[in-house]
Image (cartoon, rainbow, N blue to C red; front, side):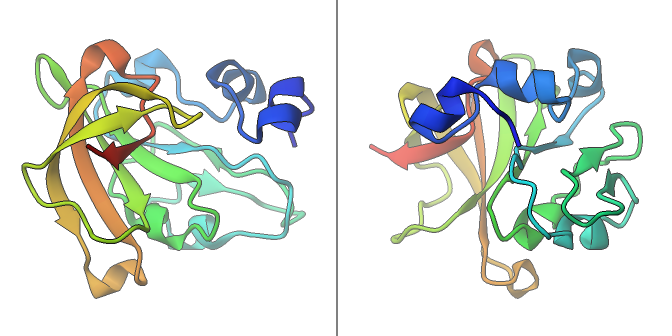
Length: 168
C-alpha cells in the first residue's frame, strides 16, 4: 500500500504516488495505443484481473496480496479486466484515439446511465471538474458482470488527469 499523506487524508492516490509505486504506465507506453491503468493500491487477497487478462499482461503472483503489475508490452487495451475488478480500480486510456482527443473507458455504477453523444464533465481522481467530455459508447453487456463500461473522449490536454465523469 502507498504510505503517503494524500492517500491517508483524502482517500485517493495522486498521479505522482502512482508513478512512484510503479503501477502507472509510462508516456512511451501510452503512445502505442490503448492500455490499462491499474490504480489498485490495497494489498489485499485479490486476483480477478490477473485471471481475466487474456494476454497475460497483469501479474499478481504470490502472495495473492501483491499489487497487480501490468506488462505494457502485452496489454492490448481490450478492457476485459475493468469489469473483473471488484474495487473498480482499472480503466483504459488511449492517447492515440485522435489528433485532439483522448479516450478513456471506465466502470460506471450510477443511474440513469448516460447516453451516447451526451456531453459530460470529465473529472480527476478527487472528483473535481476538469473539462468537458463526450460519451461515445455505453457498454452494458452481460459479459461485463453487471458493470457498465463508459467510453468517453476528452481533450488530450488533460490526458493524465481524467479518470471518470459526472453528469452536467
